[in-house]
Picture 1 (cartoon, rainbow, N blue to C red):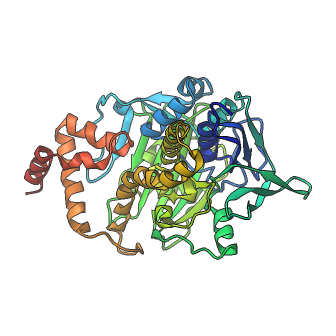
Picture 2 (picture 1 turned 45 degrees about the vertical axis):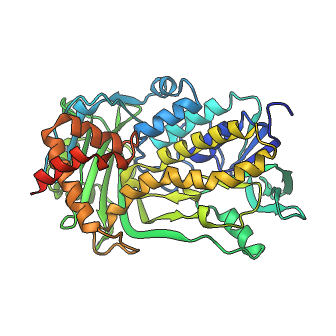
Picture 3 (picture 1 turned 180 degrees about the horizontal axis):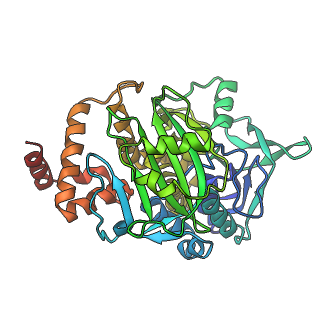
Length: 445
């Protein structure tokens, strides 16, 4: 098997994480089988198994770069399929008392599209690989193990109810919350891994509008971020394919249900801190029903701390960590994890025991990828109702973030650096620069 480290790899889940993982595996296994419980349509449509699929999904630039490395030509195909491109000169960003932030050319292009379209473009690119098979309407009922305790495949319930066994040298669990892996650990008597969690309770109400002919000319995307902790409501207008707007209204730790009717939707927008979103949609044509969704909490599963993970099993995407969607980190973090997996697989070919070596190092590398976005996600503790373990020195972290924002408004280079961190192009550790911290301290004084 020159050039390959195994005969077949199986990926559970055909979401962004699973599709990216399949591409990463395709250079190292003769065959890659992706098993998806949903029906995969012939176009860019929301899937039943992705309840948040009708909500906005930001593909951060760091994730875009990772997907482009995995799928050369991805950006071009995304644009050809209708994605909208713009830069920060066309971003109307209301946050932190600045309504808006300065609209500057930061040299960072943005590509905006619906989650179904992004997934569709990746799926179509993956179909071009001759050794990758996407098998839809196939639910993984169990992972199977050999007498030695290593993973040797999965049991799959196909459409019609027939259950079959599929052999695999490696299984990557990219299902929504890693349920197949957790069931296996319970069945074989292994302890489940520790997890860090934050109960944040965010309600979403989203509808797609036709972009009005008199839409503002000075922005493509408009965002109103609640001033925490005194404000709880926010919203976004995001351009998507088909000359449409995806409009989302959010509320943190809600005391009332999110808007369900058109009048309630407009009233909610009208009562935001500014009238930016309301004025943009008040006379716009709503094209879809209002889709509501609740996200209860972020969770990072510490697989790297679990010593007895069966050989031949890796996890990726939401099965490893799921984030507050307001930060837009989920798809991008999954793409970056898949890119790390691809690099490790390439290196494993030179090892005496490639799969054993991969298993020994993968989860530590996974944790390193998640450190940066998770350090941003913990800012949700700004709301006193957020449950979980508040980080030490959290109040100082909040003060630092406020000083950084004020300095970014004054200095375009700091604004660019802050945006690069937000877009997962650079890690938050760049803020440790002594000169930057000195300048922020001056602003905070």
